[in-house]
Every structure is written in structure tokens, then in C-alpha cells.
Image 1 (cartoon, rainbow, N blue to C red):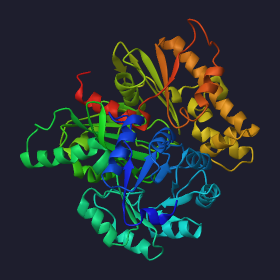
Image 2 (cartoon, rainbow, N blue to C red; image 1 turned 180 degrees about the horizontal axis):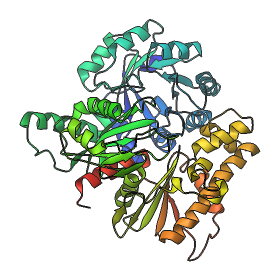
Image 3 (cartoon, rainbow, N blue to C red; image 1 turned 120 degrees about the horizontal axis):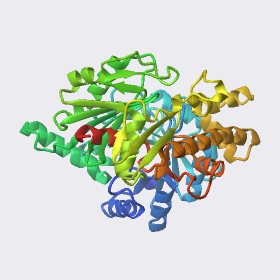
Image 4 (cartoon, rainbow, N blue to C red; image 1 turned 45 degrees about the horizontal axis):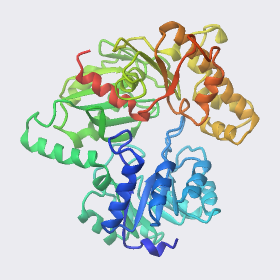
Amino acid sequence: MQLAEIHGHLMVSCQPVPGGAMDRADMVVGFALAALAGGARALRVESLPYLRAVRAATAAPIVGIVKHDLPDTPVRITPTIEEAVALCEAGADIVAVDATRRPRPASVPDLIAAIQARGKLAMADCSDLEDARAALAAGADIVGTTLSGYTGGPEPTAPDFALIRTMRTLTPHVIAEGRIHTPEQAAEALRCGAFTVVVGSALTRTEHATSWFAAAIAGVAGTDDESPATTLAIDIGGTKIMVGLVRGGEVIDALTVPTARDGDPAAWLDAIATSATRWAGSYSRAGIAVTGLVSDGHWSGLNPAILGVPRDYPLVAAATERFGVPVIAANDAQAAAWGEHKYGAGERGDMVFLTVSTGIGGGVVLGGRPRLGLAGHFGQLRGPSSDGATPFENDVSGRFIAATAKAAGHDTDAAGVFAAAQRGEAWASDIVGASARHIALLCQDIQFAFDPDRIVIGGGIGLAPGFLDRVRQQLPFTQGRLAPVLVPARLGTRAGLVGIADLAQSKL
């Protein structure tokens, strides 16, 4: 492929809302073919299965990406070399990677080299001019404005035309991407010097585009008629905060801001309130999912290593003051458990949800009702391995994996350990195996304690390639009445948003 093929033309990002009504391969192929029929010259496609499906349907140029949440890094667009290589082999002409200056499992120069070694073009998704400068120095063929506004602070609502202009001083190969919602904005991006313009949500995320119109109409009408079931959902985690508008179990619009480690709950709520102004007047309730314990509307942290929260912070009262609607709050894993129970892998049966990520969390749903309070805080269990001195999650989570690797002389994070294990390196396989063994024993204990129909496993580590299989292999009982049924979570990172939104609207 030659870059001249896409110069001055439209590229359409065919990425459905994760878990939404159109999150299927046939829908993505339909988006792609419809976009090309309408005059687009190129496509941007996320995930290997969807890329393969679109490539089988068209010879048009495709930018391929993988979005993958990993523990201990905010980088999620094609974060590993293995994924970049897989995209090349699946048919991408251009492979895009997060090129921001943030902690990451693979360096930008190494990612670019791996892509170009396979005869493909490397695109650097940047947040600012310095990202672009560094990526070009590393050999990137193209730079994009994709991540402008998504690496810190409230997410803006308009395209970053200024960044397009300044990037153009470094290279003619600038792809304008991000918050381009109208034909006029697309034309302006070209006038600012863009080589190609990418449009996504306005064309292929019907839920997002619909929410813009619904919010605008509601703002003018000044009534609650838009939908009493529309909820502002917030998930405050140890590394990032997700904020979304949820209706009927679907996230119709969402954004992410980092969790400032040196901040406090009041500062986090202020940042959330600023980000949520785009949806003002379009929701009737709010729900907040948080790590730690929620009791009578007050929030307390349980493990300062995950997120430092003062004891008994009046979360519900503080949020109600900022958002002006009724607010509920619950533990994030308990909210995710409810989301998976009602809309995901729990299939509305008795279940326990276990998330394995930076820490360990969980939730219990029995008899169609969630168990709140302390129920499901499996990461806080004390056992003989530490003589009760430290919580279980310290011996199994992403932090444990990274710390164990470092003690063995390998300076890498959990993602790096998993990548090494996939390459067959024994030291890494042993560390991942130890974590899986601990989780297997916990799952067996959960089965004896609650006898659920199934245990749903989520989280960046829980859903890492091969991890669940390792857990299954190390269960004390693998068949018969005593054996736990382990299934992967379906809702991904949005389970907490979906669950807390439903809890906010329910009578439970």
C-alpha cells in the first residue's frame, strides 16, 4: 500500500460500542462496506476477529488496532509486540499503536520496528506534539491526533485542530482523528493540514450519535421525558476513572480520565463533574462504583496500595451536591458482578464474580439479589501463606506478579511477564502459574462457601490469554459435584458502569 492512496480522503473507524447491539463481526463488515460505498477510501478496525472479517470482504486500505486493558499501564491501543505482529498477519496495511510517553509493556521504537519488519506501515497515535516528535524519530510512517485529550484531565469535546497544525510542521503525514462529528469539522481538519481524516462515532456508533441528539433535545425541552432509565455511571479505579451514560444495560457514551494518585475523592469528583457537563440534563440518577468499602453512603479504602481513600468519606452526599440527582454508591466489583449477572456471563443465575487485576475484587449474587457491604472482598482474605499479616491480593495480583519478577531479576510489569510466558520463558511461566494456582484454590473455596452456578472471572489478568485455562488445570476438583464452573466475563471493562447504573435505577 502507498500512502498516496488515502491522501485527502475520508477514513472511517468501524468500531462498535463494546458489548452494544452492533458488536458483531457481520455488523462491522456492514459498517465497512457501507462506508466505502459512501466514498470513504480507508478503514480503521479494532480486534483481530473483526479485522480478518473486514479484510475478507474488501481490499481497501485498513488501519488495524487491538484495544487491550492491561494491569499497571494506561496504554491500551496495540500495547504489545505480539499484538502488533498479529495485526500485520491478519491483513492490516497500517498498524496503529499508542505512542504516548507513558509506562508501557513495549517501547514505541520496538513496536514500530516489528511492524515495519513485516512490510507494513506504522501509525503513532499521539496525545501531543512531543509524542509525535518522538514517534517520528523512532521511524513512524504516520502520526495521528487520536489520543489528544485522553491522557489526563477532563476530555474535551471538539477536535484538536491546533495539534493538527503543529504536527504538520513535523511531517505531511498527519491523520486527524478524535471528536470529528460533522462534515464541517472534517473539512476544517484538512484545511489545517491533515493528510487524511478519520470519523468514527458519528458514523458507526449509533448509540453515541443518538445520545448527542437526545441530550440536545432534553436540554431544550427541560423535562425528564428523554428516559427515566438513563443513568450517569462512574467507576473509580486505582489507575483510571470511567464515566458513561448508560441506558437499558448499554453504555451509550463514555470517557476515561486518569485517577490522580496524589488527589483525593473531592478532586476526583470535581474532575468527573467537569467531564460530565456534556451530558447535563440527560440523566435522572447517578451511580458510583469504587474500590474499597461503601457503607451508608460513606467510602473507606481497604488497601492503600491500590488507592488511598480516607475513612468514611461522605461519597454519596458529595456526589449528590455536584450532580444534582439521586446518587447511589457500591463497591466496583460488586457493581460489576451485578452487571455480569443481569447482562453478561452470569446469565441471571446464582454467581460469584472475581476480578483479577491490579488487586483482587469480587461480588456475590444469590437469589437474584446482590450481596453488598463486605461480601465478595476476596482480595482482603487472610490466609496461612502470610500468617494473616497481609491480604490475599498481595500474593496473586498484578502487583504480586511484577514484584516477583523484579525479585527474580526481571525488571518488567505484569504485562511483560505474561508476554514472556507466552514466549515460553520458564521464569515467567512459573510466576503466572503461581498466581493461577492461588486463584484456583480461591475458586474452590468460593464453590464450597456459596455453591454458585458459576464463577465469572474478569480483570486484566483474569482475562489475559491462557490464564483462565491455567486456573482450571489447577483446581483441586475438576469434575463432578465439587467442581466450580469457571467462565470468562463478557462485559469487559464496562461491567462496573452497567452494573452500577442498573443498581441506581433498581428497587433492590
